[in-house]
Amino acid sequence: MTQSQLAIGLVEDNPGDARLIQEMLREPPIAPYQIRCLSRLDEVLERVQREPFDVLLLDLGLPDSQGLATFERVNQQAPMMPIIIFSGAIDEQLGVEAVAHGAQDYLVKGQIDSFRLKTCHPLRHRTQADRPSDQER
Image (cartoon, rainbow, N blue to C red; front, side, top):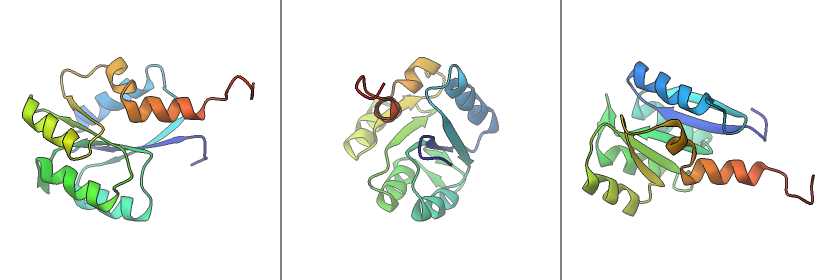
């Protein structure tokens, strides 16, 4: 992966949901990026120990971990890595709690669209940081 590519981790055990998120990121692409799809917490922990992603899109319901504990374990392993949680649970309290514990955002599956996903702070911030300034143009 080149320095200018955004390294996105997508942690989702449902192939249909994973495809949908990937399509949202492609329409139109936010920036050059490479996405790595994972489906289990143990895979994520092993990967981020070696090399954190620029941003991680994390489902809280995985085969080997459920709920806020999923986020907490990843965040403990890579505390500087921005994590956007997306969940099937329409649970305002869980969203507030996740953000209070350090998640960058909490998105609800079925209520996410391409615009909302790509304007989440970690994705927007990274792509803006990669753009040349007026002086560099």
